[in-house]
Image 1 (cartoon, rainbow, N blue to C red):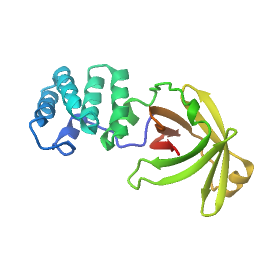
Image 2 (spheres, rainbow, N blue to C red):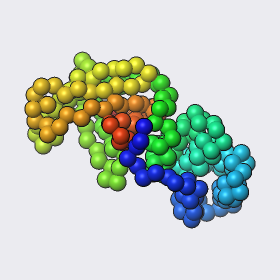
Image 3 (tube, rainbow, N blue to C red):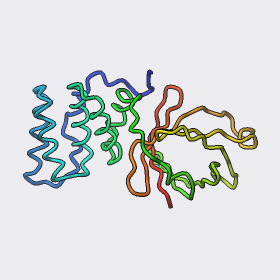
Image 4 (tube, rainbow, N blue to C red):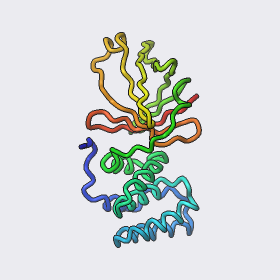
Length: 211
């Protein structure tokens, strides 16, 4: 499947300059610097080792997860790499979103999302604007409000952490278009989950939090 992200012709180019370490300025940066040199030397196994050491010090570092996931994919560990890139996206890596959309579009961690089937939620779309809005799920119906207008759609739970939403007749009449898409849950952390929305040849990422 072709995805509408700019193709990463040479992922290695994304490592220069060292732009987003998001860490304290101390000697622990050496692990990340060593990993960058390993990647430049095409020693991806050594890079993964150094990145793991760095993640022990900085367990939420998006850059380390991104470079580790990239390295795992390069050496053929695609499933591990996709899982690691999910962590990178969760902690804020935009580069990881691009690579994941290109390399991991068929990967599904198959998570249990039972506790998210009802209740009130906030949704943050992980884009440049980071749009946030709220919605409610009741009896397999999702209700959204925008500018005093209520929109509703039936939730079809597909299993394996996937679902889709089909607009009801009233909502469909108010919409200029009725896009067909699938939501796949990629990571669950306490009362929130990271998802990817797959629509035609486009991928969008977001966070849903149960209120």
